Length: 326
Image 1 (cartoon, helix red, strand yellow):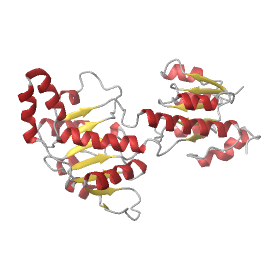
Image 2 (image 1 turned 90 degrees about the vertical axis):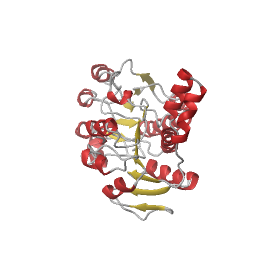
Image 3 (image 1 turned 90 degrees about the horizontal axis):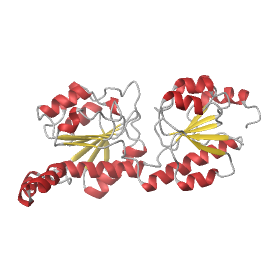
């Protein structure tokens, strides 16, 4: 029976889809050595944690790595391609969850929720209420979206049609903009936006995209929300700006080092919301991602190429390894 290794427990609906199709095993730990050892006899691996390149060298039966989500930075693509392993993902299934998080974070920052909640609990009603006179509304502000894929488009739609925000965006492909959304260069977007949302993938071009120069271009009360990947931001530059009150605040769901160290400077700012890489995780999105990943896995096990294939250059290599597949 084929062996399906998942780095994490799947949603019950996803697990049920795989019953009878193969032996579903959840990794006992997520360190590179354990993953490499436990993937050795796997036919498919479902990915929610970073995979080491050595895994692909040792897993001679492995046909596919199926991402439980959209981002592919957890899969070492060169190692997968060299091994003839297909890589697939399930894009857009958590876009709504992430977009709702963005609006929650923007509202919490503008309404000073952390300070209100802390002072209300520690100092009483009036101390919490005093923060309200410095709060602000969303309506009429400009939100700038960096990266206009499924998540960026979902953020733009909710912002424009739900909250009355002016929406601008920048993307690698400046396709015709949807209704009520305009495209700008990244520097113009950074200068003009009250709220800047990072929705881009982590690539060599986006690593350090929000650097000291671009932080300096931001409005003095601008908010920065990162739901992409931690290294897109130059942490030293952002921390310096926060310490000098050069920007209004930030909401950060992803970090260069995860888990975030307990003594990290970000944890010391009242105007910074820190969450543990959870923007895309809800009961509903976990079901959609799990079912999507299970569906891609079933295609592989049925000797079919997965729908959301992300390394088509390796298909011929794959077919030589597994000649029975079509």
